[in-house]
Length: 63
Image 1 (cartoon, helix red, strand yellow):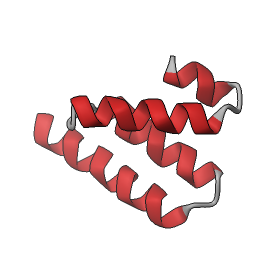
Image 2 (cartoon, helix red, strand yellow):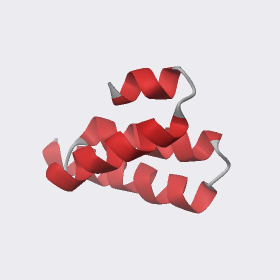
Image 3 (cartoon, one colour):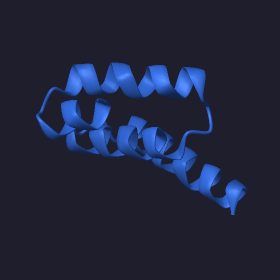
Image 4 (cartoon, helix red, strand yellow):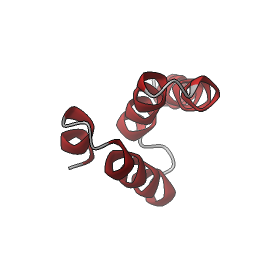
């Protein structure tokens, strides 16, 4: 559902859902990556960097 919100420019809803997913599953790679992309599109580069780095770290840990 979060990806649908993101794809349909409902950024507030997408952000809320991705954060909720990460609250319940801190190592959920897709949510971290998508939140990074969302923030990048919004021009929130510090937040984008944080979640993109988190995404990479999760992926490195699970490989």
